[in-house]
Image (cartoon, rainbow, N blue to C red; front, side):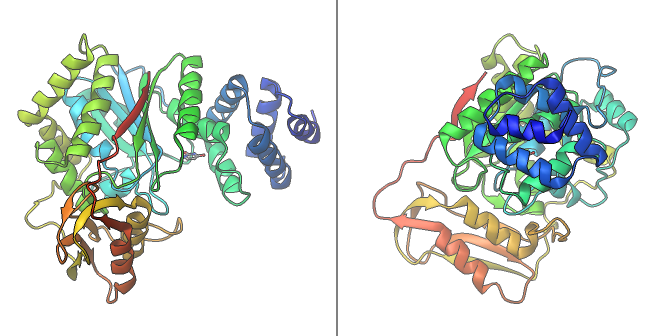
Length: 430
Ligand code: URA
């Protein structure tokens, strides 16, 4: 087989075979095929797309480039969740304990954040002592013992994806729906769960900017999952404004704990309740989605879910935070509204970028994170605001945050007319 023939075939809009896809993934992973040929093929795929079968073969080839985790020694249905990335998205920290308290086995490998979006691992690592590096054996034992473990992905999981993603990032070929689908699904399938919810975010703060693209991505990922005999449910959710109020690592941990105790923001509670209900129901722990919702609400009220979060932190050597003495910054600056009215828009991307520049996120992979800094919103879309009232609080450790204050202020659009909130959950593809 010759790589040039594969490139020409895709350039001329023909479907690639399983063997051809395996050939270029294996060759690239081994270093036998150069970057320039794979770049050219990625661009041909970007323009000409892939069929569901091709995307499934690509997923399988990437999945087989490294280790897979065999969760079969865990009794019960293993559940997992993936978000395409957002601002203030601490869903995993809440959802995991909720479904674990209901009896589902939450076995999750998470990643770090990059750019304006945060990563679950960074949030967990902001907790003193928390260990994200579990051996497969320790990971499996922990899920068997306490129903939940969240650990970091090793470099051996889908290594072809790391190579391809780095190349796509510098060749303008990231926003291709089949390439994104194969990238996400290869990692999810390598992690071994039976039931997986994919939270596909749309809006300013998200990867997918339109509903049409989000639907296309969701549809193909559900199909790929089906081809592997897994139950995949895609949620399309709004990320035009941040989720919850807190953006920044320790701030988000606090908000997650409050949500587990029944005192969290409504949007975060709603999203965790709905995703949780689908996981619990498809894990066959209830007979209906409504029963699953009821069970989850009960686990919040009786604090069982909150206790499981504490147990998970302690099992992974973390110290459960004392919420009265947890976040320490040089200052907390309030950003005040310059006019009265209603919040019409709150740009998630701007809030994410401001938080990143404060030190809560990374502009490049090698940046270090300041776990204490971030932004706590005081107003969200639809809220009434008076001139001079606080829109947000900036927890900061920098000497000069003039730019960040400006960015946060400009993230808000205030109008005199009342603005309805957009629905949080736009569509569920089951
Ligand atoms: N997230 C991934 O894991 N892969 C992509 O290609 C895009 C987003």
